[in-house]
Image (cartoon, rainbow, N blue to C red; front, side, top):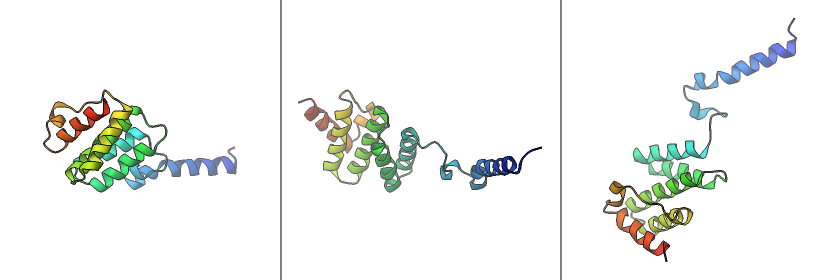
Length: 132
């Protein structure tokens, strides 16, 4: 016969597992994967939707995560640079590219990104100054 404690623990466990189903999204579940890769994906998704405030918040969370992968941090700085550039903050754009290059001196933009009229020249300038 099952003890009262075992039944209570089973009910509690089932209730916790039903959280995502009840909320309709795992983003709100406390046990959901909160890795830097997940945060980076959320930041990039928000960037692509034009929600720069949410994107900057997610990208800065990646940078504050001590266990974040090196490539995740470089990508976070890249998207922060893009946001700063399109928002008219060229110095902050330059600084974000410099920080990405400090982590990975071989970091390059894709061909399409490098040809962008706003951040392409800023990146090239940061790349030149980072090699000195």
